[in-house]
Image (cartoon, rainbow, N blue to C red; front, side):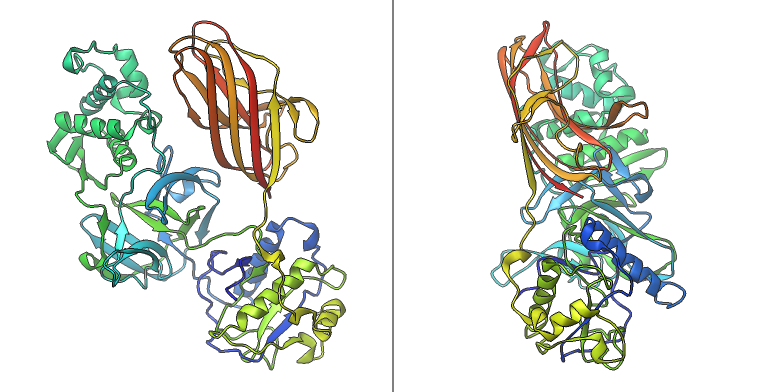
Length: 586
């Protein structure tokens, strides 16, 4: 049997390898409990993770003296967000960051699910330095790599800083997962914004090929002070991104693949454009300006780098993302790297000291048995899920690699104690924990809502309006604005798909749709907390059909609405809409 799918490892929790002595327990599994009631069965699973972390904090604190090793990268390493590069102090859960889908080799935006920071203690980190790369990481920091195979075709693998092979290929850049397919802006405007960027101003002269030049206001709207906005760059198609970089190079380049600028903000925008275009790049400050070098390769191997051990006394940190990857920058070099954790909010088996380590819970059996606590007190219920988790853990530990005996005993079988409590010990005695696990251990299913809208809703030109749905899948009717968050007070992960039909749209008018998160304004009302990326098609007139999807991480106390705007000459209206929402409450 493979490792239980509902398993939260030490690295999932942000912990390094256990400093406990090596051991090879073979005699079975020992069941424990907590001496005080915890009522975890009546709480969200996040309370289980908090309990486990607090338990470890006690053992790693001054009373026990274990070292907190920590995982990932140094504080000099930054992460790319939708608003630019940020250090770990400037990001928060829910921020959109660039990640790599290691299965497909394409990049995309995903929400941060956690920012994990470890305190400043002396550590020995692995430094890798060379042309096009600079990293400083812990031994167990993960990397998505391509590795040569006997068949000749590279395979996608995971490696740690300590296990990287000389010819493993680290990804420096990757094409986008779903770039815009239809141009939002005409190519002449893209070229003129690029020229404005190159000379740091809107006075760029006439457009190419005799096309009338946009007025400076149109340029400065997309590139204030000659700095293209991230929103403008994100809306460009792949050919337009190439056109943008080529146009900048024609004015500010010292070679085909080298761009220079005296402005730091402009340099950051150029690097952002290169990332979106799937181009590997290095940004350096030189003299009184900045130099962006577009590299001719998108991979780099450790064999071409200088790898050393370096003492580090500062903090280390690591983000958590759904892909398990993120785009990092250090000393001007950019590369995709990995998380040290894969957080599962619905796991039931939480790793303590881990495999092949001496235990600390049962004197006389710490090197012969593995231990498992139910984290229950004398009066707490033992749920069917807990029982099944112990069964799955036992069966996994009986696999050939660890090969424990199938025996399950209680803490009181070693010393005089009430542990693991009468309820758990009854299951030890009657073989309840020693049965085969059932199929309830599979993935948790999301909850679902559907909203429909049949009544008309007016849309004045240029005004954003929150969609008011008329009815819900359970038969309730009324005005429903919030799709997620009304009942999910502690927040939720969500996946929203919306279809909207408009009528009366002016020919050539742009229509925009987006998800928006709201928070209480402190005066019994609501205010915008965060706008999510928008879709903005242009319609030839009459009826407009929009579809929009978004996945997000909703913070506690917030709500999600869908907003629509149209920029025609006359009032239009929404005539129908449908929204399907899948969500996972926290």
